[in-house]
Length: 329
Image (cartoon, rainbow, N blue to C red; front, side, top):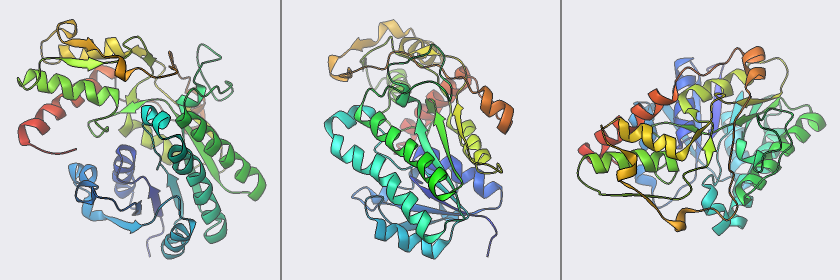
């Protein structure tokens, strides 16, 4: 049996795909938890985009059903568990607050409890989020900044974050939380603003759309590349002692500036195509996020490798390619 066995919840998402790729390169046996749905025909599309779909062993389970998790944990006996699964679209969390709390918050409780019962020696990674900072209390956010969640999603993430710390202190579980700031890639879901922008730019460039409707253009985020950020996840679980780390680039950029970068990739001006649509505004906005990842740099040896300009260019090029090929993602 392979010495290193990783089990990833949310394996079909952006981070799950890149993390799987990284772990496979390191010789891990990679197992993923999947929730069966009507979209089962495309659920491994990200892994197929990376050419690794046939190297991941998938298991049917659901974060809301602890019995299914226990069955998978008993079968796989993972050495590392990465809990990436969530209802992660912030806008939808206001429309489905109960589901968001059930999956994103209590789902993490089920994973931790299944770990404690079935494989207490496994190392655990909890995907925390910069959204927990919400109405920011410090101009630059680090591990000591107070949280002020501004959405049901952020509140659910905060529950999962503190529960991981509680299990670490109560049951001596090697559990670490990565407070990841926004991280994007060509594998980002189309519902997220960065991918909506790059997909819109690609469609306008190809003559398939004339405008790009968006909400708040002044919100600022610290955007990095997901491929860089999954390396930090792995590094956290290689440490002798578990801990919590901010993962960020240290650069904040507005949605408007992101649009200008994306349109410049195809020689167009963003102001000629953007339309403001109030339907895309949040009930409570997170205006500004900027992370300080100096702890990750010092203790993990992690620093981001991809610039924002490189990230945006990669995403635009990938969306143009996908549309021309008629590919789905």
